Length: 360
Image 1 (cartoon, rainbow, N blue to C red):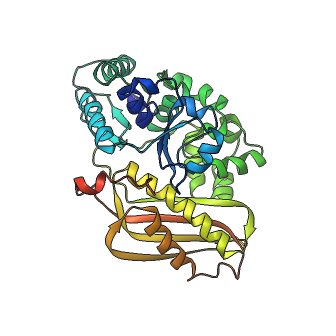
Image 2: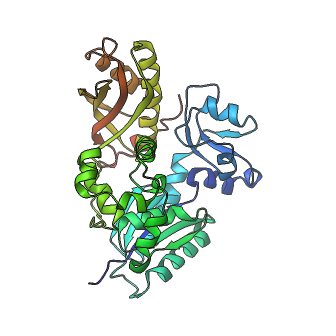
């Protein structure tokens, strides 16, 4: 069977790296792109120097400041980021039209058949990374494999400025050694649960049957089974359209304080706003998800006349929707917010797509 040749390209600390490139005095310094530390803003991106202090995207800017008081906070320039992203994507299309952009700074490429007739995906990935650096003076990491899951994991394996190749023959061994938290699609909450179940690596995950995983994790268990065995048949989709963007948080303890829930929803709303900005879109339908202590779940939605993408509006509607549930009467273990009926990215609304959702 002939395997596909998939490349996942991911720019290194993209927004912060653009700022450091444009202002050489920022090189080697902890740079944070996002809201001011005295505001309710969040971190949109940060340099690798800032990450050494435990700072990461979607973190409250005030917390980032406490972790690194000498960090340099920059509001950000989405016009510039978008222009650089277009340069990068032009390079991608020199090799293949099968490009699936996931955001401004990352994309999947299927180079099984490619425009230069190159037989080796690794050489193409190397050439793409070199050309990106020559044109933008920015570094990119890339993963090469036969499926999207492994290409994505590989691109993150040797950051920054790295290239990792996982051949079909290497896949089993690579997956067996991979810590469960490094699996794309397994978040921190699921990772914690899996570790409690004794699942710490891909080797451990592979020991469980399909029935076991579905019993433990529902339908998502099918995905976990497939990736543990290196199976991912998803094609690179050039017409990929994201239908919703959402974030959720599971609590360490069940809570019944509605005020505390409101504060948590503010944080989640900020993360959703950040993701909307990252994907250059906004949404008309807001959905609140509430999971209670007894593991029952409810959702409440509202559809607006106009699309929104800022924290305060998302938070306001989420709190209103919360009042239409039994939260407070019953203890809550999880809250989530998602936006659907997405706009801007599909319509090409240039005014909306350049909003800075982290400037609050």
